[in-house]
Image (cartoon, rainbow, N blue to C red; front, side, top):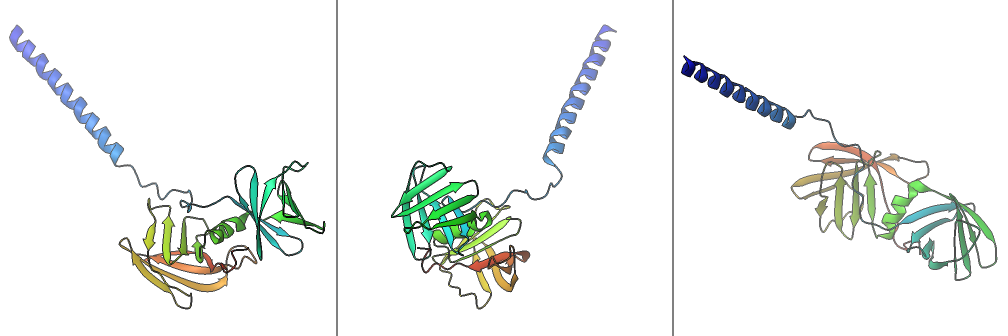
Length: 233
């Protein structure tokens, strides 16, 4: 009788072990089958660039400030490009060189010209990404309103970055004037870019509404050609 009882206990123990292992497998399976949480909310990975701040001044001029480390900046104005070194001043940041003086306090700045005329300027943060692209030599740029994707055409190379893609889509030897829709293929992806006109984004930004079709998926955003003939100096 004792042998039968021992065998019965052994069978119960083995059954319990099987149940525990099965439960663990079920939990593992449930962990792999997570519900679709949708695309991430963060913007697309930006293109490698430089630190740029943009200021619009009361005289109608735009000043693009390119950071050159802690001790210098490069001022881009229409027709000239000037490097200024850091100087002591009551402002948060102050730079001087070539008879120009540039001082910044918060979002306000003052440009002192060689004739000592002082021009007040205010920062325009939303223009920075476009001016930074211009400085990198980008000819055309477009982006989603929520920044989930961005497209750039530079030196006949088109690059599309999307938050759902780990790597950009690149297409070489692209020639486009904007007169007709752009249709290209690269990395196994078909792209069609079509400017449709109409103001897009901020007023007076110069942006127009665009449609981008990626493998039959419609994306909308804003875009424009960038005037790189003078690179703002």
